[in-house]
Image (cartoon, rainbow, N blue to C red; front, side, top):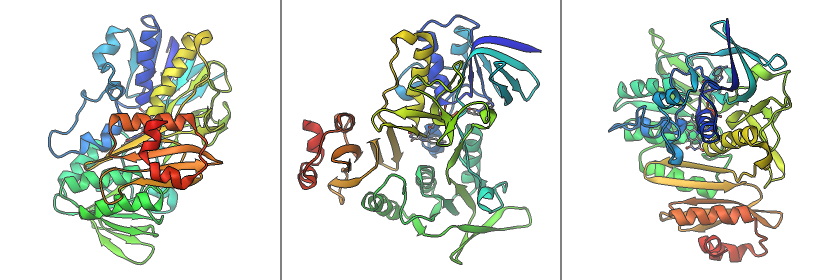
Length: 426
Ligand code: FAD
């Protein structure tokens, strides 16, 4: 038993949705394109899961955040895929792939063949067990990667009003979930091993701005230590979290956000891997010319940095997906992907954007006791990264533009003095 398509997108997340829209714009015919996804719903904007979905009042629910609303494009509902003759094979896990034969085998035993494959399998949340701690399956321990996780988190949260939550991990999932828990009237303690939150991106100064804000909302921070075990009741529910530093935190629920692993396993030994992802060229094409990779799973050349990177951000998923489709459908008109890395987050009433690379020396600007703060990163005499909290649309466009231009910076004190004005006048 089997079906054959010209184009198959494996994975039904953010990049799959943006790729589908691009295919229709470039003239895919009915019946040529198929999306296979383990999830039971068509592609949606994953960032909504830790933001709108967790709000206590008028929470976001599908179909309101199907792709491509995040980029102010059409919202692709199941009806849209039907109208465009795109086959959605949902609730279906692909269990093996054969890139030589150009086939995928689903868990249900169906063989789906393709002429061109786009791998858009994203990533999965790292589990506590991988760090030697058991208890991930307890009913009040939550992760957050897909819709099912979000629905579970909402249910657990609703059963814990007024109770205590421990958030494990100080990255953006931890930070966004902590904010949502507070908004849902739950007492939050965040635990992470680093010296400050968002350690991969934030400087200590930026981090303390956010940590102070969180503290003003009642969040407690325990840093420099990790979870060592859970105390469970007789029903297998977590009642307390034990930390390696010897402390014990009573808990009605736990949220774990300790990183992700790209879903590459189907292609290991078949395609070249790099930086934990599937290596692609500037056309998002893998080491097999009929196979492309996009989104969180792809390691692609970032021209601006002159090196291959794997990015775990929604903007990169959207744009790499569109670029791959353009390279597939109009190869002669498509240049190499020239991407300015962009990442954002929204928590409480705060909202920040980051462009480029957090490499080299940071120069801070703005009012760190007020509402607009920022930083530039200078590496090898050039501005390579910019961060801004509380800016206007024009401000964000200006820091993006300045980062893309990579201007030479001679005087860091002068840059600090000019602050946002530097980007606005460049
Ligand atoms: P995904 O969107 O993860 O989609 C992968 C899809 O592939 C899934 O549907 C999965 O089920 C499917 N799949 C995987 N393996 C198989 C298989 N074998 N068979 C069938 N299907 C399979 N980024 C930002 O820049 N800003 C944010 O504020 C932000 N917030 C986020 C909040 C949350 C809660 C999460 C989880 C992520 C957030 N991100 C954010 C990151 C962003 O969502 C990801 O970068 C983006 O979703 C990556 O898109 P993707 O298509 O590569 O993968």
